[in-house]
Length: 445
Image 1 (cartoon, rainbow, N blue to C red):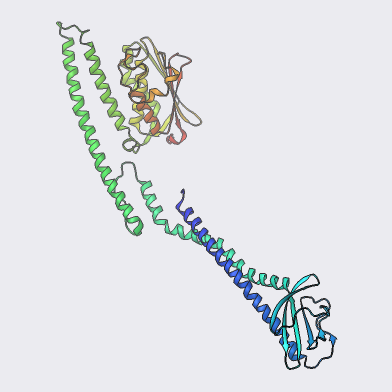
Image 2 (cartoon, rainbow, N blue to C red):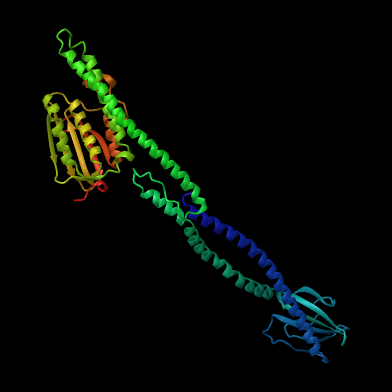
């Protein structure tokens, strides 16, 4: 059921049509019967009029003109002598003489309804008749004339029902507008003034749900802050102790290198998990603003340049002016940081990383290429899954990772209604990442 309004309209129209059809069918049958009774009464009245008017007649032909063939009469004496008749009827007796009786007879290619009356004053018989098809035609015209307005009223009733249902659903639309206009961080109760009884319980239940959600978000935010502090502090302490061990001449640095890698991995996992949490739709996308992604790229390169230079790698940035997006600045910083960090991690020393940001007809395009080993095409979809790493922990680069970097990138791309594609770089030979931000996400210039 896609629309309550359409469903109610069709259901009510179907019920009205069915009831109207049954009523009209019954009314048609009863109206036809009543019309036939009226026509029979007219035949009887015609016979009585003839009996009262023709008090003393001689045998003759009289009555209707030749072109009139819808009714007829005959007057017979008691000894079956035809005293008078209309000129559209034969001279023979058309039926048995039975006082106050109706009957049917066929002649001249038509079926006729006849009535027989005994005139006891003059001792004679009067027969009147009328064509059956004319009777039914007149009866159907009368009944049809009364049915057509009822049938034509059904579409009018449909329009009135459509309007009435829309008026009845107005509070529901108002509730929908209230919910739709809420920001991602707005968990305040819904106003319940002047709501119909049917929606009151729904609003009360929704408000209770919003209250529980707000409490849950507060707990999660507190947990995030506590986790960031509680997890980072011991990791920092471990790094300090590890540094002291590495400076101890009595300890072989190679023996404690696995410990150093493990501490680095734990720190990386903690940072990535917290970053993934911060970029949930409810916590990030309500803080949108116009950001220049080219400027963000410059800032990320500047902050990471020391690490990149340590590996003797070259990094370049080519961009158009005013590559504006409407989005979450922190999320876009995280996206660029993860992509640039990944490119640096998996590009060997003396390698090259190239960034290009350009305005296109459909939006803004971000391209990052490197001269690393790249990724096999069969792995393109899987690398975006959480905690998945190509070749697992035995990656040929030997770089420490947790498999969350590209998962976070994919999540941020989805938040901005963008698209991301992985390709083989035709210029540098490594991985090429293309992110297309749509026109709707472009900021005002």
